[in-house]
Image (cartoon, rainbow, N blue to C red; front, side, top):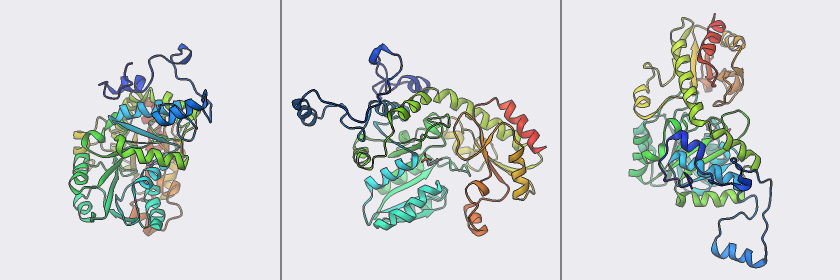
Length: 396
Ligand SMILES: *Cc1c(COP(=O)(O)O)cnc(C)c1O
């Protein structure tokens, strides 16, 4: 069977199309079927006993797995170069499942502080209720991360690139801290995808994605995944069977279909992100652009060394604009749709102040570094010339 063995070397485009799938499928179909089943039956009492005693690879009850999501898990494991992947119903489901499976009362967890605010909220508000300690240190301050690690620390966590500031973590340095200090390391790689960066190769223990974004890629599903070693993911799979945060067979098929074009889409997201960032940087109404592919970005060197491309997310600031003048630029664009999320074929634009921080005090916004004139543009896969022309008219 071609590429169902995750050790088979294959480029990202080939892996996206073929990995994880059986060569021959039911009905001689080229595509995988959607088995719309909540339960799976046995021919006899003896076949149940054989299933249990021989640990046979088949389905039993839908909360523990379905054939379609297993295909997606194998495909994602192959794309990341990992042994195992566990799929969840959302990115947050994956994060909660991973941390709950590995942390005990008395353990501590250290985050870089630009990580997704809901991830940190889960730790700060909820894990602490179970006696897990939570610390945050400034993003990419490796000395601060080392200093925050105590004998009780079990996990270090970062995203890369971060959102919306697009800081790029030196993945080898991060993995090295985990290895030397004997703590598990986790990278939320939602913004880079395995096309642009493969954190497991650098020695990180777990890679997590909101598959809602680039992996699904069409703004039509929610899903999440954790990739790593079989051994370290065994308790995560077990807990998922209890939590129930699994994808339906229909959702898993949508994700499988979306993943087929991951490499093609990422090439375009990378190209559009760079073209739009370069245009914005040259525009007189734009004060500053954050995009790791630009030489002006503080983490450009790390990005150039470690990433194939920098994705579609571009953050920029309108010169001398208050929040209303910034909103007027957003309201004037015609191609990007106004809304949260990123990574789909349709470009999305938003003002973080309004979309995510409206109920925060000015002091809190300053602490999060969310100024009133900040715009986040998630470039889709439209023609870059059209996106640039649209931004030019909106700024003009
Ligand atoms: C969207 C997102 C999440 C949460 O994923 P959901 O699928 O919305 O639960 C986590 N991390 C990052 C970086 C994200 O962009």
